[in-house]
Image (cartoon, rainbow, N blue to C red; front, side, top):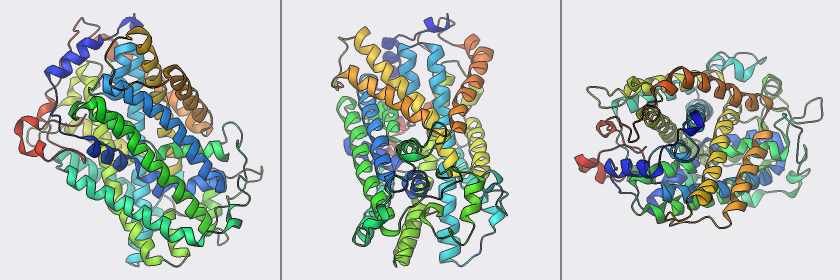
Length: 534
């Protein structure tokens, strides 16, 4: 039976110990890695999307989304410190819930990473066009090359988002050829993003006006099921701004003293980003207002043709909710155009590293699933010259580029959130189950009141999922159905565990050269340590 295929936890740990990765990351590096993953399109781009959904209530939206992430982070901290191996939520589910449910989690993670990379690509495109091309260089970038038809709908000129597709393909090329970003480089990128946000807060706080926060919640707490608007609807979208902290758990195999450092990296990075998000949201709305554009039904318009058409009119052209690079736009509006451009450049420089990490993360999930026999081993083929997993990287990059070319950032973020929320929910269930089934296994970090925290995580994930736009809600079951068909067509029959291979064969991924931001430079000096972050 498919639900009986559970990979023994001891076997997973033994395999990881036998083929362990170089442990070189400490608590500070993990925290910086988490901050680097988290701070990206969510705050630099989706601030305007969130303001359109919730108005000034966006501040509360960040608190709601952050609260769900906190309890989820506690669950991740315990499970990652117990099982410091590759594969993240997929591996955790395999050890407790069995192969079939683990497959659905891994399949959802692919949705998270691929669509998330597409969303970041679109966010980068917005800053490239508005800040770099038009404001700095004075180049009038054609509208028909700046957004796809699904982004502009009835608005004139939209055909393809060429810069978004291009940056996705460029990052794919870098991964195929091999990259060598070090911990120092990642720290520089994190410093750029954090400095930009600090400057934004310092400049906007003195010019905040109380009237810009009235009405505080124009769409109320709930905008209606399936509408995706209101404070809770905005929280479901802004959840994307926190996605990335779970990537810290994927570094468990390369972390020194993971029982201590993984929880610090997870919770520390999340706390830092939560504070920034609330301050930035308050500064943006307080400085220039964030009133949403309302529809005929009395609710804010959601991402789509009607909103795009309204934003194209002179009445709303300069509104915060219509800005494609909101932070730079706010500073330009209040008289700090030069600094606004610098913040735009900070996003322009830093966001590609997030795309790179997300693309890298997806290929590593593919690897873990392929080494379990659930996906064809051809996906783990290594390029003879560059020693990189070129097949799966190219496939992933093409999918990401196509989605970035034709979809708006808000819709992509909501779809990515659907997959992420499912994975987080399953991790909470795994932690709870392991406490009951294996209470004596060593736990360097224990979730306090695990039953309550697990229930809050599960309930929070379901709550946010139910408040996504209806289109995003329907994507997850449709995507899962496709995954189930693939599982029974291939994975079920080729599974190593199903064939009695308890200690599964792991593809020779130690030949794969690319590192990502957050990996110690020692890995590049030590040929025996040049293993990827999975």
